[in-house]
Length: 151
Image (cartoon, rainbow, N blue to C red):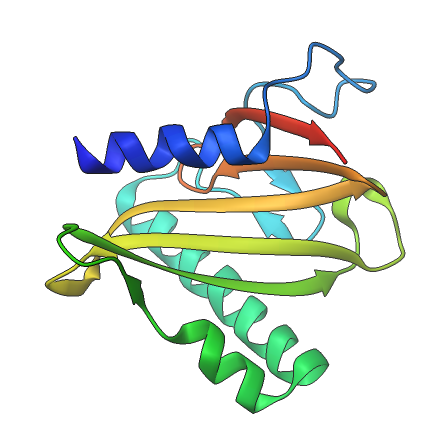
């Protein structure tokens, strides 16, 4: 219940879904976006490998671009008192997002059990394929999270 509420609040914060498709980029489900290989259609073992590869790529990019001190702060879990989940987020610029060969921001959000950081409840990837335009997807399925926001 609390996770559902958090997702609803995140959707509200990020904005309502846009009806505009922007040339097919916002297809409901995707397999990849540049360096991001989503877990779409993979078995659990392969999905875990894909996640591990992507997460380490984000950690390395964040460390290189923003420094180890910034990375350490981003990897710190954030838990609200009384909630049964915590979050962490890492952002870095990656090349190839939306087919663009210049660096674009990528944000990874992980929601995990308050008592077990290894029990991940949700993994989201938000990209900015166009300047001022945000798209968020569920890492495991590649599905659009229902919010697409022009900023």
